[in-house]
Length: 266
Image 1: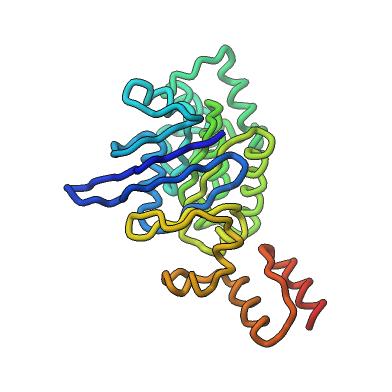
Image 2: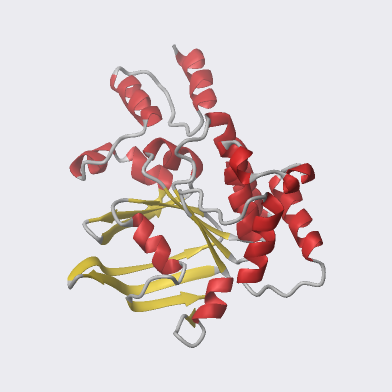
């Protein structure tokens, strides 16, 4: 599963916001997206914004003729909690109806989505306004997978979650990638999150894609980060300072692994 973007541009009031963006990403990695206009790029990939250039899903170009079918295969999960109905069950039925998803057993489809994200089935009758932030996030993912999309786009949905909730939801996302073959893109302004949880990074600067590389390689290149005025993940900062003092630490994505390494060498 892959998405390819060829010379994609976007104009706002005759100003070119995105400039000839080209990349190919696949379901083999969880892809991080960082930089100004990242949300705009996700909205374009979702098929909800007009653009210049070409977008291919599995080598088939999205056109006006097939845009609706393309959108059925791509789910966009925004940062905002945008719900339209009162209860969870009503919201899920609404999404199924809006997507014209044909299923003989609507309730079974809801239950399957709930089981996959790890929510209690008793939540179906609850009011959405009564849910916690993490429950609403899991609900948004359950809504996204109702129609079995091939691609899931996340826009900064982790900003207000605890570290434990992040880990739980990231475990779910990895399961969607590894067991269900979903192509996952996560846009975030949090470099610590991107460093720890993504495999590949797309970096936007002034509307251009300036880098597509393995996340580890990008964030270990401190001179590059400083040159482009990018924040340096805390784990990288700590390890770099230790190395400067001749402490033989390795770079780690997980703070627990770093702590073990510190005990070993200090």
